[in-house]
Amino acid sequence: MTPHDASIGESPYLDALATSLDRASTLVDLKTALLAFSRQLVIAATANRPPLLTIPQVAAELGCSRPHVYRLIETRQLPCVDISVKGSCRTKVRIPRREYEAYIVRIGGVH
Image 1 (spheres, rainbow, N blue to C red):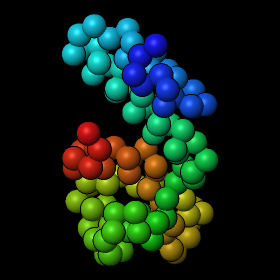
Image 2: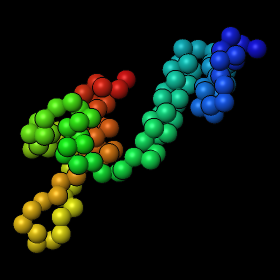
Image 3: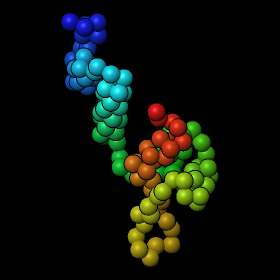
């Protein structure tokens, strides 16, 4: 029994991490196990979240203003899609969650 076995609990993610850590024989193995674990956590955390985000949602998550989000879109730092009906006078801009998460990684928000 390893020291972390007692604190694993019922989580399948933590059980998988514990198994990977037990098998890790090098720092590379340890890094690989931790990266896989973090990916699983991100997938689990975003499983029930909408695939498209509104401008106010992105602004709230980033802790910035809506005009700042529009500037990120205009400068192509944050890709978006327009879901408005063809021929509509108004746009309905949405940010794909994957693009938002990729932006967070690019700016160094997730390591």
